[in-house]
Length: 322
Image 1 (cartoon, one colour):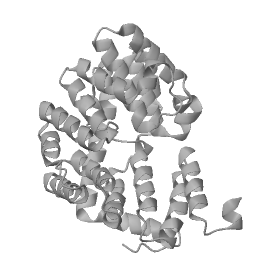
Image 2 (spheres, rainbow, N blue to C red):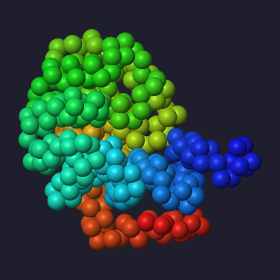
Image 3 (cartoon, rainbow, N blue to C red):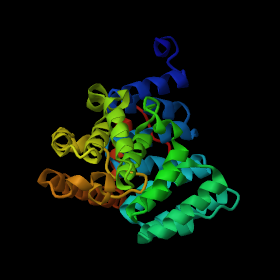
């Protein structure tokens, strides 16, 4: 193994961490990423990877903590936009707008403050328009996806279909294998919008392809609880409520993603779960998700999250230098 031959090989350590993350072994993944951070404390890469891992593990507070450090180390538009998501989910307007200003400073003047305010106010029309405008300015497909979710939420699935088909032309066929977690939930949204715009055969084709794909296979969802929640959404869009509920009951709530969509809303506000809204199991899950988000916001605000992070780093034998 490369790590055994060269224990200071950053790429090997990061690759090994990602492999552990892909298997759902988050503690092992953290340990290797903490080592990368100790070797290169001024590099944002390892901090961003830990933030992604914590997001997938359902810890928005810890994800936000690490992304703040990553954005401080590398104040690029991408890092600042990623740092924004936790604050949006928590509804922290001042912090979110402060990140928007940092984004403007790091992006030659591109202003996302109207987009941020629109999301905080749930002004879906303005959110969609601003997201499309910034997508045209930057080419960052995260903004295109955000626009599609805003359109779907305001019953403009026709517009969402146009956006998502442009971003994921392969989904007109059955090429699913190379999509990651965020892309997968966007693909489920496309299936939902196909159904709502009368393209039911396309919706059925896409949901069937998603369920049969490697990224949502039984093995994949067992390793990554966040993938299981996407599988729940896929069954919900396919109107297979029984299968959706069976999958939902198998989700490890304490180790699964919260606020799963790019628009950072609870599951009971996302259209891809609409067929489950009246199911008791789903309502209980949604209530627990809201509780977890509120609790994590309190932990981050009180400094408890930071103490927990430092304790984890020290327990792994390293020191957090930021």
